[in-house]
Image (tube, rainbow, N blue to C red; front, side, top):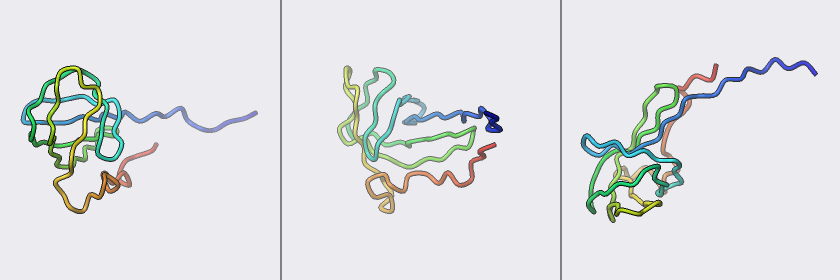
Length: 99
């Protein structure tokens, strides 16, 4: 069996950026996420949900209405942009390279 496919795997980072604090996420689904690490954030905090694919950064403004408490593993947030309906228009990946 002869295969010409490459073993390319993009470098992907997903995190919340609140002021100067970076909160790493292990996954995001619509308006919820799983935390990679334990943190505490006050209710109503605003920031950006950031996704980087091979260094191409895209972000959406979000609000952590309930904040984050120690011990939380799942969080929820709301999008500031009315055009982002349930997170379905999150990121435009058409400009990312796929080698």
